Length: 189
Ligand code: IMP
Image (cartoon, rainbow, N blue to C red; front, side, top):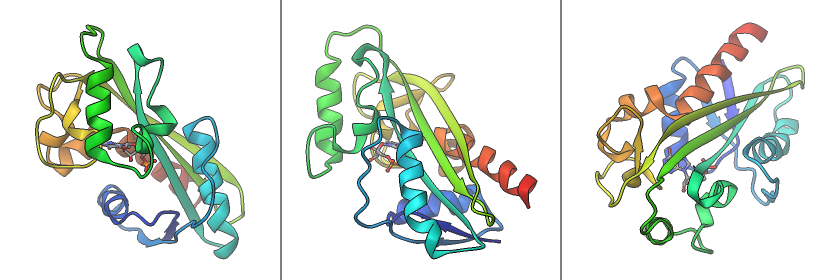
């Protein structure tokens, strides 16, 4: 089954293809749309609505995700990619996160992913996935992207960046949201 994904991010297409085997996944860049919703679901809907009119009769998908830290009132949240300012810079984002948590004992955090779908009949569906954990005192691991070296999922003594792609996908916010999305696609047909 063909599935158009609203992204220009090759890493994301690879992760989605691993989690949704059997789908013919094609990227469609929702170029120019402003992701200005206050939450992940709103931004995912903005992106999927930008591409759906180009693919009538097909499934379309967009996701939006980020890191929410308890002690920072949910920051960086929807600003995760640009936490330390524009343009998006992973090293600066991670350094700022560690600086803002300096001396903070409560390091609980979660990654959240919202997946928005438009089905072949034009109806919208939402799937949300979360992964809870803590922010480490220092980065570790070289796999993955973004905040992966700093995020230690509950029950694991390792950061996301120290897990294999399969391990990460089996517990990650994106893996969980996409598993829900897959169920929706199977149900609607
Ligand atoms: P996006 O909406 O999936 O593009 O994610 C926005 C930002 O959240 C990314 O640029 C990362 O900073 C962060 N993020 C989202 N998912 C992950 C993840 O799985 N690992 C690490 N960082 C992530």
